[in-house]
Image (tube, helix red, strand yellow):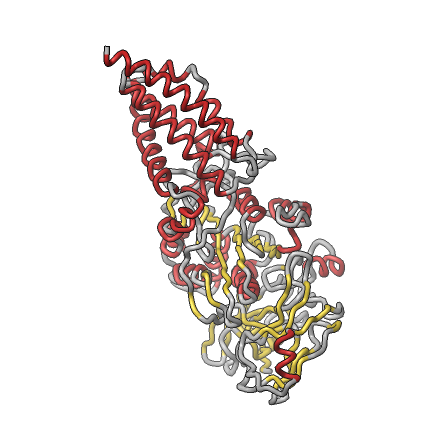
Length: 596
């Protein structure tokens, strides 16, 4: 451990002499209160340190002690259901010590080191060791398991970086604390249930897998039009009040990920309070139990030290990789990466670096890439399959998507869910624009969707083309009015209204409509497009649109989303038979006239 002295203080940036022998990104304890910091630059014998706690009262000449290790998080059973700040300090525990505002230098174990967990050794591994067989201590080898919550089993693995050796002994089934050793190697190295891992270093994998499995969210506009794959990356940009946080909440509750990690990065305190109070009350649709049993929250509000905001996303993705390595599919909600980028800008300015566009540091794209590229669907070291999907909210000032954070984010993500102010003002949720959004995963997940319904790609393409035509026709209507359009073009507007109101809009307070299974999503869209094709045939034969309108099919199609339950899809056939009967009768009558 090296000890230096504080020479200069500029907000969260501290310069200390005498630390030239320390390593880059080593953790440093600064001042008499031992506040936590991290070395971000070395200049000869001087170290530039960014501190993660309030340094009010810190004076020049105060001690700065390097711990000799990088900023790391403790990984093990007990993480799920916890609430941490950006450097994995347990907020609930510290609230009991310090109250609403943490005392600088306050410490708390990230995991409960006194609680005993029931460890069940891997039966096959235990048998091999008992027979005296040689079992290499390879990274990722599963030693046993612990029932962490009712929803998730925590697998105890050999951490990466273990020395070349064999497993000499494995503990019997029983109760152990996270720091107790459950295995020993032939070199005498003990392996506890918990392990430390540097937050800025990605955890290793056996290989990458193609992103051909969709992350099902239950939101029709996402799953069908702009799908996200497991292990994919998505951005939700939008101005204030357009529904970024609410969209992430809905995805967190309903998506088919096994573990949810929510990172509140620089958000307002009242928004984070809503998350902290609502998530424990949410019911997991899989198990009927609390959603917190498979959720982990990282809270870094806008009034917390800015440097901790910068590191919070790395903490979150490291925790996600830990569960990914067990073979789970993990979804990260980062809200919002714009506040994280603002923290980078402030720290860069304090370090007197040359600013780039809009004052952001020149390395902003690199940092965004480092974060989003840690997503992926992978083969784990234990031989299983896991994934980390990252969904980052972006808060462009004034809703301007041309600002740097949004533009650079688009370079590293493949799914862009642009929120529209006009849709949000019209109470159309989710307010995802079908004209500005896109997904590059559509072709990769196409085989999966076509196993659900073979016409997925066809109706999706037809529907998107129809919405593009609607946009052009709407501009014409604004200039000359709807009466100037022929009936065939008016039908495009009618069908588009059905798609917008009866398909794209989804009510999270409606018991039936809040979640839509994949089969219902495709069947509903198929019916809408069938209506459009049959109605267009009638109009080409000379039938006026008014005769189709009085049938009430538009209203009936719009209501199907909230009247047909996920388990009662046969009701679609009943409606389809009625619709075909009415439109075929109209078609026959005008074909008869044509013959006469």
